[in-house]
Length: 257
Figure 1 (cartoon, rainbow, N blue to C red):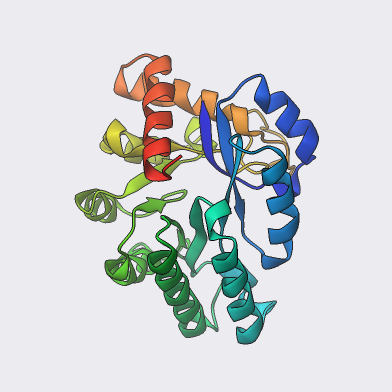
Figure 2: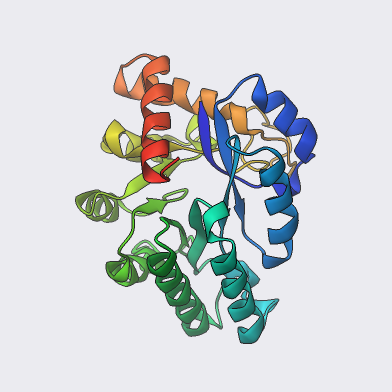
């Protein structure tokens, strides 16, 4: 059981890791904000070969950092490239970013170039405005990803069926969060995704499948991908154990772990 995307900096790290050891093979924690990079790297080094790091820049953070600060962060990632397994999450977010979409696109392109340079897979965040039925951000994102020369992982995929088909035609990995336990439309996308291209993630501490009362409470944990596996197993009519095994094999292949 392997969670390819969570955010350890928003959880009681050592407590979560201790319990995860008894339930999982490991997990990847995604650095979405440069300020968390150093502290997360220390934790991962302490728990080598169990806690892995993906280093990125969430598009929502664009207001917090200058171009020079982002360039300094990229330099720091290059210096620690042997200690990370991916670049991400990075990408576009048209739900949050209204005014600085061109600047966000330029930052995304920098991280695509970084991934190519350090030869690490890309973990993609891409979200359109809820009112945008064309999922414009995903179209732009897919265009930019033509420049990627490394494996691509679509984190929390939220595009259309046609965009999913395009991503699969490029042999991208599609990562499904624990939202699949609650979302019928999300399950439909999973049903269309071959298990060979599928990865599991919690995006914890968000999206707790057991939390039905307070959706904003940060209670999800990495091992709850097991609940996602149960849902996918029902959709694909295969054993849950096969879903967990194959998605872990896919993860180790995608991230060279």
